[in-house]
Image (tube, rainbow, N blue to C red; front, side):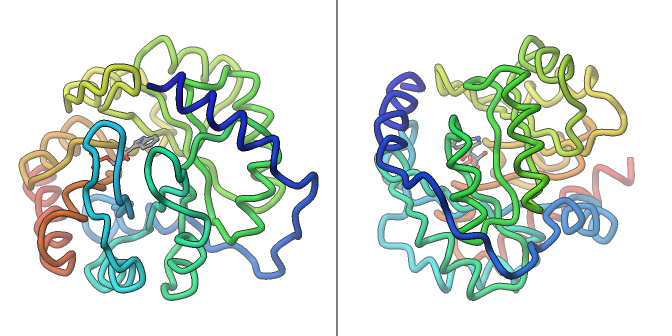
Amino acid sequence: MLEQIIAKKRELIKTLPAQFERQEKPTRGFYQALKDGKEQTGVGLIAEIKRASPSKGDLALGMDILSQAKLYESGGADTISVLTDTPFFKGTNQDLQVVKAVTNIPVLRKDFIIDERQIFESASIGADAILLIAAVLDGKQIEAYTKIATDLGLDVLVEVHNLEELEEVLAYSSPRLLGVNNRDLKTFQTSLDVTEQLVKHIPKECFVVSESGIHKKQDVEQVVQAGADAMLVGEHLVTNGSPTETIPQLKEGAIHANLR
Ligand SMILES: O=P(O)(O)OC[C@@H](O)[C@@H](O)c1c[nH]c2ccccc12
């Protein structure tokens, strides 16, 4: 599946313009917002807008992105992630632009970035941060793409799933924000043990985001206890009631973890 996603992405990239307009407005600090969120509530939260995924199929096809984003913000999300991949996740660049326009918190563009032009595109549509995935990029590419993004004022979340990817990333750069994906993008197997195992090998200076498979307070407790500074939650927030209730419930898990 990951290979299919990347093959399709390669095709779509051919249709991208050579140049993009620069954003006039300064970016919102994505990293800083997560850090502040951790200070205030014990854990930072990236709340994700995700209509569908290859692993779970359709999750929330009819979701009203505008009100969902507002509920994320009023519910206490520190930042928002928007899936912009269309063929596999049914998201669009316009989704991100809508979310950015109706909120005041930083927005991550969640997509499969494999070409420099996608970074300029991300900046032009108003993203405050981008995701770089170690399962599809090597350490040198991550280093180079991080530099391009940083020069554009974007923060970067580097995502790893295993020790091999982590070591490859660390051989070339020192990411400030490191995501541990609990889901294996090749098999879709998801386990919070991935965070527990990998955090031990991550340098203390990194701000760690535990991603995927977080559904309840106890999950949050587990990953925070393991050493995660923030979490990225999609499915649970798009399929379960109002985010103004589900977000505070999730964040409560950090209080329990920190008390122990
Ligand atoms: O819906 P979940 O299980 O809460 O997961 C969210 C997020 O971590 C997941 O969407 C994700 C993490 N890394 C990715 C890379 C590409 C696409 C999607 C992802």
